[in-house]
Length: 95
Image (cartoon, rainbow, N blue to C red; front, side, top):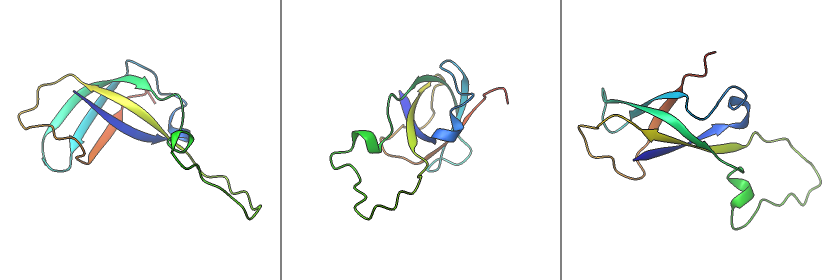
């Protein structure tokens, strides 16, 4: 099983595949899962959207993008892992 976390592009500087991750699930307080960074997305969420954002005003505002990072869950969960649950993911980048 895995979790897809959407990190800000500014969080990726020290992130690498294989780094340890701690995952907590909002629905199950006190349940902590261990995992590892399995992959870092090749594009932002907006890059692959069906209808990309259009800025017709000519005012270009720099918006921090989100990049999908897949975390492979390595520990066994005592509760069912249900698609769509809210999680908090912390990655040990050595920082």
